Image (cartoon, rainbow, N blue to C red; front, side, top):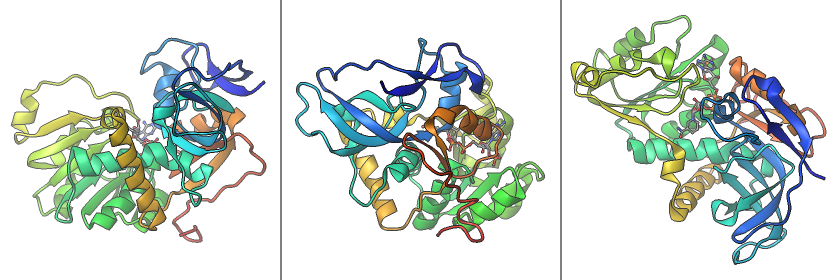
Length: 341
Ligand code: NDP
């Protein structure tokens, strides 16, 4: 019987148990996939802790890649043996899973399962944020928090390709080097420097056009003080805890600001939007404009350790769980000295 990580009570990493699961056959519109790799995302932490509540038990994980092994009724465009990947439906930390066929995209032969599991959710997030939430151009000045993380390192490269000016914040001097190496124009260590003062200094007092903030509680409301009048605050995560409730009037006081709380799953809810986004990300990767930095892999059964490292701010780039895990494969700080380019 295949195994999966199961969470029966919300809590710390220790609540994730590696258990046998009975899957059954795919229903109408579904396929069964044998997963080779599953992405680890901060979203999985919110699911595990219950910050985003759901009915238990759950198998965390919203991103993965593998091979179709069985096809349900009415699925016309997938057959057994197809290589596929997804971002969205929870249940990723599993050797095998059932999933709606219309949430899958086929993988080109030159994209590995490991790479796909690292880029579907994080890559599509960067793409919708910079193309749709606020259309970034070469003239834009952007502030991006946690610029050396999984989403962050993809953002550094994507914004460098656009030609925008990016100010990135990070939590260590090592991460400063990494973000810079990946194309971030100015990098600020927000544990040792006041990022509002640094943004004002870098922009000559003008402020930035848009702030992408996935840190949440700890960077609020300072992120708003970094914006130009009528700038856009894009809140898209809670790594330090959720943003507290605030008065709308604050947006007027700080310069008629715009604010949105964005989620990838709204932007890829329609099948065509998912396909367009995924194709764009795959093109960026295949053209070498974005390199997916998988800095650490873990056996899928060790998901708890991956979560401990992610929450301790000890990871950079993307982290992946492997089902058929053989040897530890770590590329320390890929993109810095000696890292693969
Ligand atoms: P990361 O690899 O970026 O890890 C989170 C990073 O947040 C840490 O490495 C750390 O970087 C920073 N951080 C700041 N304060 C804290 C804290 N108190 N505890 C832990 N980390 C902290 O994760 P992901 O790439 O998976 O995701 C990045 C963010 O994007 C998350 O908030 C996630 O929820 C969000 N997200 C949102 C989506 C959406 O559509 N809304 C979709 C995908 C991701 P440092 O040390 O440099 O500060």
